[in-house]
Amino acid sequence: MSAGTPPVGAAEIPPRFAAAFGDWTPQAIVFDCDGLLLDTESVWQLAEDRVVAAHGAVLEAADAALLHGSTLEAAAELIARRSGQDEQVVRADLVREFDDELAAGVRTLPGAAEILGLAGAKVPLGCASNSWLEALEEKLRRGGLREHFTVLEASDTVEHPKPAPDMYAAAARALGAEPSRVLAFEDSGTGAQAARDAGLRLIAVPTGGHPAPPADLALTALTDPDLAAWIASW
Image 1 (tube, rainbow, N blue to C red):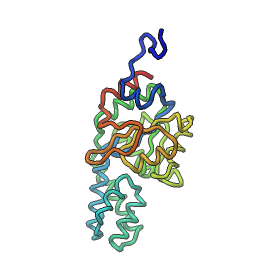
Image 2 (image 1 turned 45 degrees about the horizontal axis):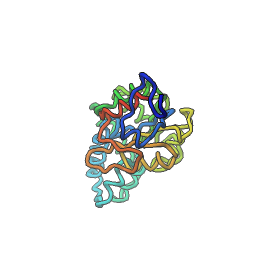
Image 3 (image 1 turned 90 degrees about the vertical axis):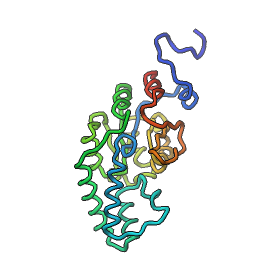
Image 4 (image 1 turned 45 degrees about the vertical axis):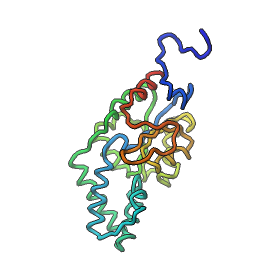
């Protein structure tokens, strides 16, 4: 057998994954949640819009980018600042509105369940989200995805949420792997920075309308057949 020839029966690595990762494979994977696995970005947006309107906040052009992928605390601080209202009141309103919207149901994004099933059969999985832990648990449960994860990290389980690397570093430790041996999936620049700064390899799957953040490889959707083929090759 010549050098570089895959063993008989081994799945072929799709060329763009081979170009991005070579023969590297992860020992664990950490997925973002909102906008990647679940369509909770739209749920959160509705909650934010209602709170912004209720408090008469006047947002600036750059605020949309700041709010995308932000924590509850960051969103509450920004809306309170733009409206001149009490931050704790705004925060409580955001939690209430989000819970009300979430109760109406949450949509699992295309390919999410399938990729979690394929990847989870190979390596342990974690989920890292800038939402608070209780909300993350509830979202994953409602979306039928909670069973796939052995580790959850959220904005209230670490000292600094995304874009700080704390969450991804903590998830890697909890999954028993060095960060350099862990793969992250992210849709936002905020999360991508957190994963990269923690030392993880990264696949970006940006939300529609948003540019792909810097990553080892960018995909347009989790339904990309090459992603499933790459996982099968591990």
